[in-house]
Amino acid sequence: MRVLICGGPKVGKTTLSYELKGSPTLHTDDLLDLAWSEQSRQIVRWLEKPGPWVIEGHSVVRGLRKWLRVHAEGLPFDYLIYLTKAKYERTNGQEALDKSVRTIWNEINDEIVKRCVALGPLAPRIEYRK
Image (tube, rainbow, N blue to C red; front, side):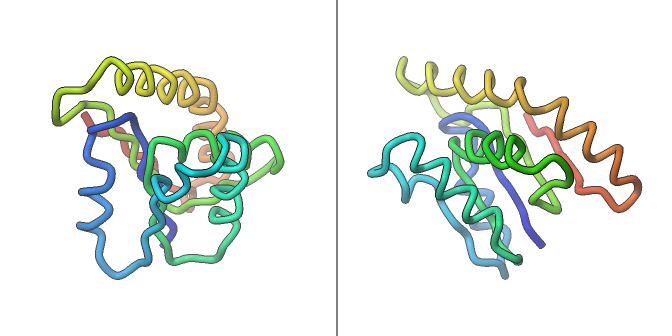
């Protein structure tokens, strides 16, 4: 299974990824030393790998946006979990990052839902968690 866990800072993405045992987990925090565009390109490379895998991090949405722009059909995941509620207090910088993640999510959400509908009953699942 190919699972994406995305959301802003401090929402529990990494914690949840550890609870999903049995699949290798790729953490976008491991890409922080790369420039933003290179991070997105690397996430696209991860999305192109056959599963099983779990990819988690706030920059998943940027990589997914880039993947959607390159691929006119389909989705690169079987299950997507979008976490929205912070579990801990965030700094101003983390709040700004959360706003950026939400902006990109709002940009791609309709396209993801449209592709799920087009794929029918075997479409990937999307779960929104607060």
